[in-house]
Length: 141
Image (cartoon, rainbow, N blue to C red; front, side, top):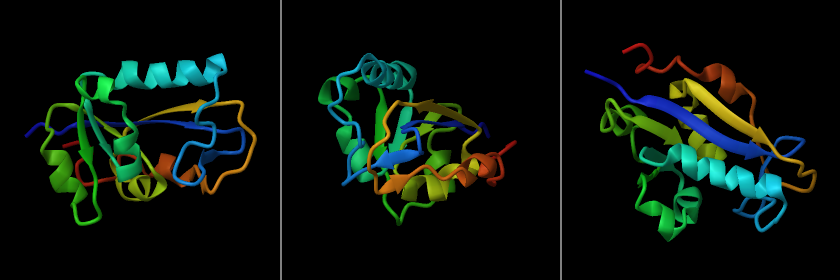
């Protein structure tokens, strides 16, 4: 059985910031690097599957939803069973940190953009997620 190609994309601040009060800390910033990051995310995920926590899944604008399959992850969902539904497809694992804590071991490719944000945050990128990849039961299947 073919398994999905599991990837993740995220942007972090200069110190690894990921979130603040349930949103991206730089949400609404109009600098070119912020706009380019958003455009790149939708360009690369278009035509693929996005598995994400509720806040991330609901943040996808209506005009982009038609171009991807979005699944809102819940804690009762088993990662292996959820991923198996998308055999042969490219699956992006969206945040936040609780999602990556569970799915990092299945991610074979991380695409991380470092933005020039150096402000407050209450969610941070965990570098341990990077070394967990490819060790899940689906790797190499």
